[in-house]
Image (cartoon, rainbow, N blue to C red; front, top):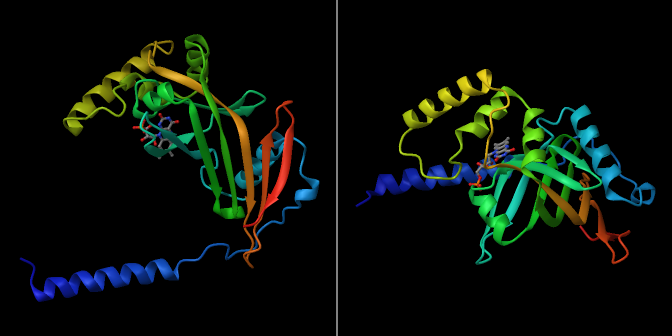
Length: 231
Ligand SMILES: Cc1cc2nc3c(=O)[nH]c(=O)nc-3n(C[C@H](O)[C@H](O)[C@H](O)COP(=O)(O)O)c2cc1C
């Protein structure tokens, strides 16, 4: 049973947490302007330009993004991933086919990506259909990455229950050793995925909350329609 003073301590902690949240600010720095009138007909060059601008403005890890998927029952999940490329085919990322997200994508190949670069007050949202690349292309993509990326892929078992951290340390040591010795080692479940966008939305934050939102939607003939959205 909790005592009166435990309850007080809990209330104080909760209040100080809420004060912290209220004291934090967004869009409190000088932000770039975005003129949607000068935006290109296709979202890809604008996305590349925004990622580059975020990197140049010092946004930490601007190539990381949230990936949202849903399972067979429609239950959503979200997690952070690295962007490997964005080109005419779509937005590329890699993970284990056997992971939670890999299983989601196998039953529902629709997903959404979210990027937020606080340094420039910009958000990009992408929604579309995801396709798994071939084993050869997945392996070639991994080959371009670091020894650490190969070691992580070789550890495997992603999203399975882990009995202890020492089990992880053992598997990781073995994977690093193999990755150094055998740079072409197969990482069977590691898969490159490409999300072909159907919608891409660009959001430019504004100190006066007059945020600019520009949404691109792919039309039946394969071109892009654009419209502004209320913030
Ligand atoms: C900055 C950052 C980058 C990450 N990049 C990847 C990635 O590229 N691929 C990946 O499988 N997991 C990556 N992860 C781990 C995922 O967020 C997630 O924990 C893992 O993929 C398991 O997700 P799942 O259980 O939903 O399948 C990254 C995590 C962080 C914090």
